[in-house]
Length: 77
Image (cartoon, helix red, strand yellow):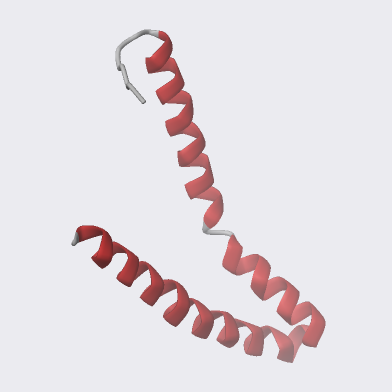
C-alpha cells in the first residue's frame, strides 16, 4: 500500500507539476532568449535538482561499500 502512495505522488508531482513548470519556464525564457535557447536553458534548469540526489546516492553507495568491507552489515542474496 505504501509503494502505491509513493508512486502516485511521484507521478503526480513529476508529470503534473513538472510539465507545467517546465512549460512556464520555457515561455518566460523564450521572450528574452529566443525559442531554441529558451527551451535549452529551461530543460537544463529543470534537470539541476537531480545533481544533489545523484551526490547523495553516490555517498550512500560509498558508505554501503565501506560497511560491507568492514563486515558491519551482512546481506544475503
